[in-house]
Structure formats: structure tokens, C-alpha cells
View (tube, rainbow, N blue to C red):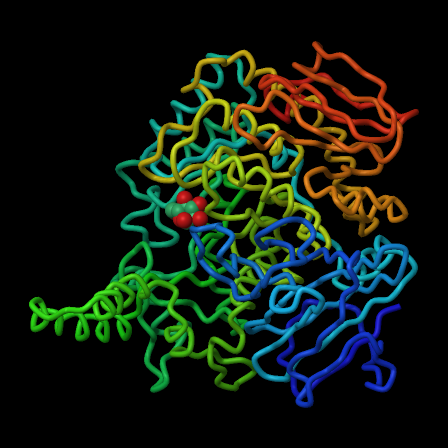
Length: 630
Ligand code: GLC
């Protein structure tokens, strides 16, 4: 049962699409204790209570013990001391062992804080900035039925085309057609499956959105066609900020039609991102959504059918306003070179390092929503939602017959109906294998099924064993894209030694794709989780509460990735009798029947283990080098 409670005057978010009549506060579950102005509530936690959800957030699967802030942030440090990542996924589930289960969705487009047993280990406190929000309380007999009920009210998830499950190679730094051709040719030469190559920002002319650098991407249309003949999809990055440059058609149209976000005085608000000074389209205006979405026709007309939307928190490296203030402050340093004390030094350093994604900037520009001026920070978490929703709508017009692969970096609940997401700038750390594992169920609860992390890690240098272990988790996620940052060690598979093992893993992925796609579709159609924490799948088994590094996949499988350097195996907990498939490839594998309980299992670097419930079997198809050939 879903009860909807409305506090104050919430800004409409479109997260929930089912019409639900507001309930009277008198029927609120007594477990929730509200502050007088209703801007926060607390729930007392029992020792065995676990909390799941919050989608793209840090720490483990069970969210208890930390603070999480929904405040869409361009965050390159996915470290334990951070509070916010790129998305705001405000659904949480209270899982009381052999007791009450409760789903809560805080529908609020600005900063929302979930202090889950951090300040007080036995209390969960949820707070918003201003008491104007809608709270959905979902009650039911089981955690999984509550999640399904919540998923139903937020609507069906976006369905990616099958090729979106194929292997994708990306890198920030591919500059020209030759760089892309090299990827395709190396994969062909070494007989490595491949479905897509990503075009990061360097394909543009001076990072101006909707342009293509004619020298580096000459005969673009022919190139796209040539790639298509080889079943390779090119997937360009599209960022929202429009370069400030007179004579550049996107900028000129934006200025002329008042499409950009305004400052307090009503002037276009300048921010700096990759193209230098730029303007942010005001995606809250229907005409801007349409305008920006229609521009994708430039790509769809030449055969492009996949896009990743980046930097749409929106990321701001600095604004004209903030850089002026910082420059004035830093200028005072020259009078202090003889007297500077440490706290002054830190203050100067903070001034420079605090320029990017600065809270003050987000309070300095405005949107027009239904004819009213609304300060950005009040609706911050909806910026990407509006961008993606608008584009997705235009896809139907500009490419009605195409199934488009579409995912975004930033997000809010509801956006899952229009796109997938990737989890942004992770690092080449073993701990980030565990991180994506932890994020998967929460993302699914919040509607996001087409998800994945940068395989191998975005920031820093990857080692061959780390790339292999990373692949062994990406093996199961809908998006499987190897991506890394400018300046990092070459991360394409073909730069490493044990090509045979990498090929085996990719073949395994392709052998699994039909089954993964079936599970994915089942989870879309029936509002289910693709990845389920053991504690929710086996609610009466106390031991499952302590399992934070294994996941049920679909109804029949369990995955147990290795996420420690040099490990040649790991401990696992089996909640029932299962068969372990220890796979070197789709052809070379053994099966071991194992009983419910704790086990150590050997998993060599070139092996993947999938557990299958007793009486079921692992469905492997014949692999191919491309999904078009499956
Ligand atoms: C952002 C994206 C990353 C991309 C880079 C350059 O950091 O998250 O994936 O490679 O921008 O476009």
C-alpha cells in the first residue's frame, strides 16, 4: 500500500506517474517522528535493522552507518568521505529482520540528507532544506513486494537495445577517426567481440556541442556508415553547456530565443565547462527541451543511434561571477608573502580548489518554471531529468524507427523511464569493483536498470589483473563499457598480455547476453530487481544480513565477484544448496554442487564463478563477436 503525504508546497517533479490522492497526516506510520516544521523525520533503528536503496551512493549495500546527501554532484572522488554523487535516488527501504518492512520515497528536488545511523547509530534521520516535499510511504508484507509497488508508481524503466549489452570501448582522448578505427581493427585482428566505440568530447570543434571537428572526423557520415557495416555503433558524448561564441549556431539561437539560464538581473549566466565560457540551457522550459532535443537530428540523420549525456548535474568548473571573486581574493596574496600564516594559506588554497561545482554558483542562476522564476538550487536535482526527458521525447520524432541507446551521468528518479545511467568517474581501484556491486540493487530499486560503471576504472592507471576483475563484475551489468580518463595508461584490452583470457571473458559475456537481456526485460516488465541483496531475497536467514558482497541476479543466479588484489578465491555464503559454475570460457568450465552455508571457493584470475540454484541451470548461448551475430 502506498500513502502519499504532501508537506508545504512542493515543486512538481514527475518522479511518480501514478495519480495518488494525498493521505491525511493522522494515518502516518508512527515509526516516523517528525520535527515541528516537518522538514525532518527520524526512525529509531533496532540492532538488526538494515537499510537499502539510495541508488548511486557510496559505502556498502546496507546503507546503515553513514550520511548520504542527494545533491547531484560532478564528483571525481568516489571516496568514503564524500556524501554526494551524480544522482539523487531518494527511495530507501527499512528492512527489519523478521519484522516490519517499509519503503520511503522523499520526492524533493533540492538537497536531501539521509543520516542513517551515523550521528546516532540507532537513528535514521531524513531532512530536506525547506519543508516543501512529498513523502511516499510504501507498506507491504515483504521487502521485494514493497519495491515492486514503488517501481510501479514511478513507471516502467527505459529499455535499451540489445546492442547496448555488447562490449563498448571508450577513452577520453580518442581524437579522430583513426583512433576509433584502431580500436575496431585491433578487436578484429585479435578476434575480440565489440559492439560500440564511444566518442568523447574531442570529436567536437572546440568542445562546442552539436559540432563535429571536420579535420579529425572528415566524411563523418561515410565513417558512421562504414562502422555500421561492421556492426559497430558510434556513441558520442553530449554535454549541456553551450559555448559562448557569436556566430556559432547553437549559441546564437539560444541567445536569440532566451533559452539560457539567467542571473538575478535576467542576463544569461556564464559558466565555464569544457568549451570555456558557456551557457546552460534552461531545460525547465518546454521550448528549450524541444530545441535541444531536435538538435540530436544532426546525429541521428547520419546513422548515430547511441548517446551518453555527460556533465548534466550541471557541472560548473567556475562561473564568471565566482572566478572574479576568487581572483580578487587571490590578488591579496601578493601583500602577504612575508606574513602568511597557515590558516590564511589554506583559505587561499580553498578559494582556488573550491571554484568547481560551488554551492554559491548554484544559487546564482534561475530557471523559468511555468512562467515563474525559480532559483536553481531549489530544483538542482531535476536539471538532468529535464534534459533527458526532453531529448527522449524528441527521439520519437526525429528517429521514430530507431531503438536508441541513451544514458546519462546525472539523474533523478523518474528519469529511469527515459534513459539509463553510468556511475561516472570511478577509479582504477579494487574497492570500486565492490562499489558498483553495492550500488546495483539501490539503482534498481530507484528504477534504473540500464546501468554500469566504467570498466577498469576511469581515473588512474589500471593493472592487467584489476582490469580482468573489473570485467568480471561488468560481465553482469547491462552497460559494459571500458572507459578511462585522459592521460591514464592505455586501457583497451589489446594493450595487455593475456589476450586469450580476456577473449574468453568477452565470449562468456556474449554467451550470457541472451539470458541477461531476458532477465533485464523481465525486470522492466514486472518491476523487479535485476540485482537483489541476499538479505531481501532470503528474509528469514539471519546470516544473509551480513552478506554485503554477493548479489542474486534474476531469480536463479548468485554472483560473487572477487574484489581484492592478488586474491585467488574468496569466501561465500550460500543461502541454499547451489551449483557453482567455475568458468574459464563458455566451453571450458566445471560445475560443483555445494551445500547451504559458508565456503571458500577458488577463483583464479581467468575464471568467473556463477552460482545457480539447485534444479536450475546456467543458460549460456553460443557466443559471437557482435550482438548482431548472436
Ligand atoms: C567527465 C565524464 C567522463 C569523460 C570526461 C571528458 O569527466 O564523466 O566520462 O570522459 O568528462 O568528457
